[in-house]
Length: 259
Length: 259
Image (tube, rainbow over all chains, first blue to last red; front, side):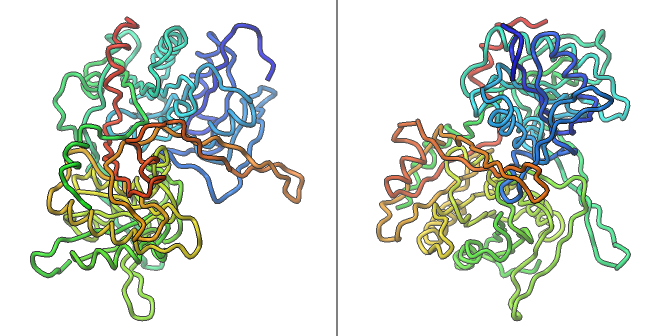
């Protein structure tokens, strides 16, 4: 990569695919603060969690539409995109990795299922300051203006201050106009969950199949959670770590004397 | 489900697929302590992380081989298997969820990419005492005897003592004979990582494709890690949590004053 001097190199990816409006909005915002390289999935990858592609070869292709370069598309998952970008395109760590803007919420337990956040987590594992952005809006014509505005603000702060070792940011933006957003709250992940239902149907051969559906249930009443922030029109920022150890549980287990 | 009285109901799943020898060994061990229901992927799902299937319908079928019921196979990911098992088969929470025995290591950072561990994590999110087992052996004819022995011991302890709320167990077994294993160590996740390489090739049409490869690098020298335990012939037990919040990073971020 040849880049202009002193401007940070920003790797942009997502899980909604390279043509998604959320990515386009994110890239436009990031171009104001750095040189942006896009490596994104060639098709939507929502719900892919931290999947990697082990048993299929991966494709990586430059994409141009009407003469404008969109970057690179990859046949794999968001995590594959990050690995390929660092190893095959940049040949160095970018100064910042931004993932999103996801078209839909990734607060609370959704961080675990989210392809957007898994790309950011992969960046953090590789030692790159990384952040995922998600807009809490599922409408087809969702307005990404406020999300892009806060993405730029937060990206600038990460470039200026860095992030504590081993952590990344999960940023969710409420689905309200920019002027109605009250500010930014640093939060913890709300202990909410999905209560699944499966929609059982019969195919034309009379064989059963199932669609996953469900509703999100938040019994965590804390005012320090991402859910609280979003419900109160704040942008939620949760620092996330990839040390999954439940350190507090170690003394309890040491009492078992399993041998 | 009709089950005999007082015996715990144990849900068994994996990511290597319903015909994998590791699952068969696990089920045999679990049958000595409870009534086992198997719901596993119909094909290998290694590296699937916490993926869920949102955009395809799921299939769920009973499997019999030579008149012996193997349980249910599901067309989705390990996480889909857990969701379907609880909602469509058991219609209640099992007393224990066991995932594995994975044919290969899931210690350290591998917990993040692992389908075996994502199934256990999904169980924990649903409030089920859950554990994933992995054998640190990649040979085709790997011997699961020691792994099954410790799986039974640890499963009994979970049923007796329970697990702290919000946590599950990641158990890895070293690839040595049972008699050489020195015991069980409660550990933290080692801060190791993969250094990826992509093997770049040309297909018959002269288009590039890539295979993901890489080597595992552990610069974490702590004697309290899962990597240390395995290297020293101990079974490693890491308590894992699905609150990914980096709580220690919150004060740092609060000093940013982003608004």
